[in-house]
Length: 255
Image (cartoon, rainbow, N blue to C red; front, side):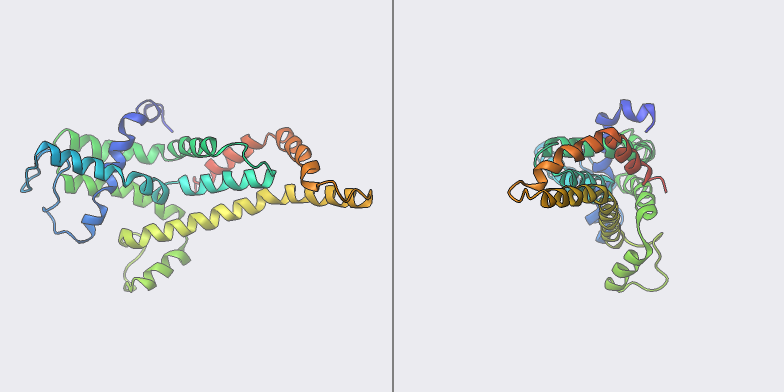
């Protein structure tokens, strides 16, 4: 993530996401030139009073959690971190707040270059009143579409293209977002579970070894999970597990 993107992340994150995605449902079926601006009056649009503008703005903000989950790297990151906690065998360490918070900041890091492009190409010209809301939506969609295309498997896209009854001339580059987004989500889920499987293997080996040793010693009443937990924690710390895990997660989005 660039230095500039880090410094202004909190300032434009909500605005750039809002600009890129709050009108996606409208943009799928509404004719050109009829999308109203969230604030003020667009070219040929309708002027709204301040209370209506405020209502529209906060209604649009309610879609941000779904956008963050479905169209960014958040899904893969939070699932892998959750599986990491389960593999360690710790019930509530790290707690859910830490998992979600770390996932959010890693998402900002991974999505930094993409969000920089959304801000420079769409949000900033729109706030300067140099482009219309419809053009800002189109410009903001392009970087997000490029990011999702890089992470979407062809088989997943073909599944939703077939379910959506799209013609053979429709490719991942020009497919509507209603097809690209679910294909991107299931690709992220598959990748997250593949990474989780690799994470579970060394800890599963430790559990099997501890269970075999306890059984051979006749300690049937002693829980193998309780005995294996310190060894798994020691292995994770000695291997610098957080560094390896977070580094591998960030690198997995560079393809």
